[in-house]
Amino acid sequence: MNRLVIWSEDNILPLANHLAQNRWLVALRNAFVSVIPITIAGSLAVLIKSFILLAKTQLGWSNFATIIKPLGDISYIVWRGSFSLFALFLVVALGYQLAKTYEANRLAGAIIALASFMMSVANFAQIKLHGSNVTIRQAFDISQFSTTGIFTAILFGSGGFAVYLICYKARIMIHLNTNMPHAEQVAFDSLLPGIISLFCIGTINYMFQIITGTYFGNWLLNTIQVPLIKMGQGFGMVLFVTLLIQVFWFFGLNGLGVLSPILDSIWLTAQNVNVTDARNSVVPQFIWVRGSFDSFAWFGGTGGTLMLIIAILLFSKRTDYRTIAKVALAPGIFNISEPIVYGLPIVLNPVYFIPFVVAPIVNVAFSYWVTVMGLVNPVQVAVPSIVPPVLNSFLACNYDPRAIIFAIVNMLIALAIWAPFVFAADKIEDSIHPRTFFSREY
Image 1 (spheres, rainbow, N blue to C red):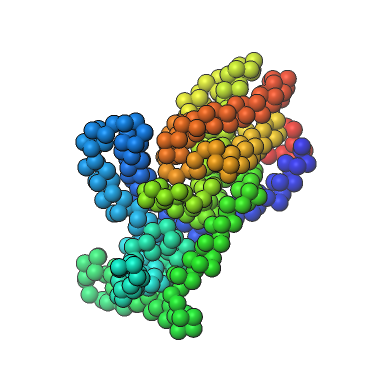
Image 2: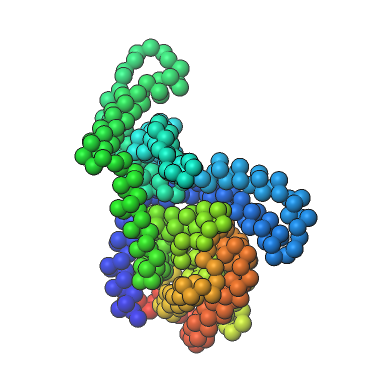
């Protein structure tokens, strides 16, 4: 066990530290966090629509459904102005976060990123008219601003800002000696970097259209984004990412934070597609999405530590462990794992290394195949991470009652995995600190 932990520390920890400190990845993670209100608002609109449909078709509350129909219409308006424009909001947030990270003009960074994204999007839309497809020129298809445009937003938003940043840091500016108001001075400082950036991105798009005959955004969607999302549906990929997240957490690094760009780019994109399908009353396309981890494996936070807390309260005789578990119980119910992860601690504690890694992997594997077999709805609603387990699963699966039973079964599986190691911890003398198991000093 010691050799495994030390090997992981020598080979995996440096990579995790590098990813966690990369400013572009941190900015991308923060950008996804910034648009959480948009995601939750759109998902709430889906829940309202689904509840009205449920009341009318399954509960027999026809009059009630008629009375609250205006609420459904309002939800559609909210959806159209929020979730259906997800990529648009994301690229603005990305430009802002990048500018904040590199200490450039934040508003200019957001605008440059947005303009760079818009230049890569096809300026035509296709509609059906009398059974035939009609192409409308000089018009944007709103679907290109939704989840289908996420990768384009990330690539061109980052690229446009990168050119702007190079020029901005090189002081390629119009230098004025007059006493101008601050807002005007800032605008003039960003003028030349912004112009150079936009013309560079415009040139790239022009050359690409001349060579390939298609817009870069359409090409990126079909050749990179769609295959990546499909790859993310593979069983091996899901388990591998789960393993990495747990290992990073074991060394004290926020695994979700480190791998957030990957999780959000692949599985959040798939989740947003499922949310859109649910909104349109279409069968969800994807089995495993970003919210599947929270709904089916991470009870009490990453690692399923709520079940460790319960196991300690049920089986442990150690006073110090029970005290920590009591303190961590309330946060754990709302999926906040830090009190138990750092307070017990689980971090760098070889006693709990195996269950901390194995419990989520078993839960994820079981959940994946149960969902594949159609025994529970795939996650199709974005639910805030602080929603307690079981209720989280019920809402995320769009009011599927089977999700309640399934979540409870998964929690019992995790409890069974944690329990033997709680008994083992009781046999360790209280005077021995977990870190003294290592052959090196910390």
